[in-house]
Image (tube, rainbow, N blue to C red; front, side, top):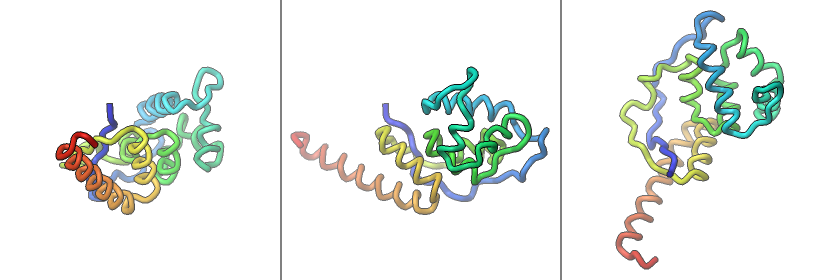
Length: 157
């Protein structure tokens, strides 16, 4: 089943200021992060996916992801670094970490179904350069629409 990717990801989402240690959804984020790390196939150490390995793959200081478990709220920059490693859209990471209000992300965006390899590529584009990603996603959508129209006109091809 193809992954669902949004065609329009505007930068109009409401953001939430950084929270103190007790104010951000630390438990939810850490449970989500462990699940995403397992799904991405990161090695486990001590019964948990290795945050040090995640940090190395993402180019972060090895202690950074470990601090998320006990005290520090992730930054957008650190989430942007881990998004392509995990294959998780940046906005989903931001919602889980309490940096973005879930109801405000991509309000009214029209979903675009993409095959998994293309969906992974789009997720990587979005996490590194959101503005460029939006343009590329629009181009991919047009190509897929043209391809689908051609297929309908000539099912032999």
